[in-house]
Image (cartoon, rainbow, N blue to C red; front, side, top):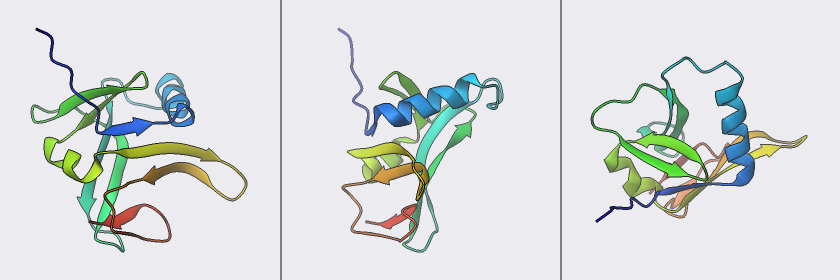
Length: 114
């Protein structure tokens, strides 16, 4: 019997394309993997983590839209159902987070409260 692990986070096609570009352009140190998570801080209480990191034994590895990423199991509680997008416009450029679990977000969109 095969076990399927449902990804707590969804990447839009634009976000997946940008992550693939970053992974393929040589700017990511060899052996590093994409990490998605949360940390305490920010103007709303918690901040999103999106970066490249070493895998450790407590990480869960997920695959979403062709992207493998790491997440601490406890972080899924805060991020379940979140969508990560990539914006490349004149007014905004970067990754954006749409989190249905957030009771409040800050103006910059990178911190939230639950």
